Amino acid sequence: MLTGKVAVVTGASRGIGKCVALELAAQGARIVASARTLEGLDGLAAEIIAAGGEVIAVAGDVSVSTDADRLVARAVEGFGRLDILVNNAGITRDGLLLRMKDEDWDAVLDTNLKGAFLCTRAAARVMSRQKSGRIINISSVVGEMGNAGQVNYSASKAGMLGLTKSTARELARRNVTVNAITPGFIITDMTGGLSDKAREGLEAQIPLGRLGTVDDVAHSVLFLASDQAAYITGQVLGVNGGMYM
Ligand code: NAP
Image: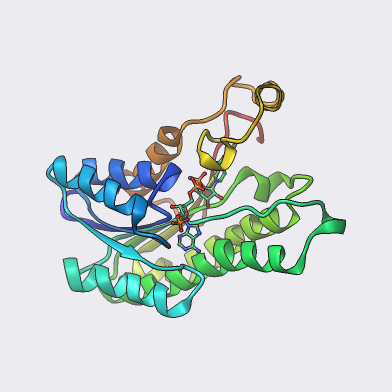
């Protein structure tokens, strides 16, 4: 159980982030949920409150330094502390290298990698003072394997692994652990546009023979946030059905 713990989840309005926020709340954590628009956050907040939980919804862009600082400040103002940060907000702007536009490179790196850095820096100030904390970065199997058509996305997700390991080394003496999860192909809006044929092609590459669910990822977040994971830091946990080993 995570009773009384305070968790910030970025990109919580849908997909993996929403499921992570709901599962953390179901374990007793108080949630600070963030996304650029409040639309999806309102639905999430209503679900958490209906189940007897506590939640603060914050609209903000993780790639903007002042928004990241404000997100952490809202957690501390509202709930008095910050125990868990899940850096989940992410986007894709796919295209082959030779046709990749500068703005598509920048948008993906800014959201996925700089956003994780800004939220980590803001959270680390609080967690270092507390001498406890858990930071969980949602990277991707694509950051480990690469993927044609995703030079920007895979670079951002590989960058998150370096961010994870360096931050883990810096914050270990403060009893703050930092780990990454690398999901494979998970059924969300991000992968929703796949044709049946493309989906079958993907399934054929996955030893467990299916795409992942948001619960598959959320359960690994719960583990890394739990007391049972206290001695794990700087690690990369693949949640990919065996597609990369
Ligand atoms: P999703 O359904 O597209 O949701 C993305 C979330 O991030 C939304 O809540 C979105 O809300 C928020 N967001 C986007 N840009 C943001 C920004 N600049 N600032 C704050 N919030 C922002 O994505 P998902 O499939 O659940 O993926 C979640 C994470 O898992 C991402 O980091 C993704 O790269 C990673 N991942 C996904 C898969 C997969 O197969 N789905 C696989 C591996 C890794 P707004 O649009 O309102 O801001």
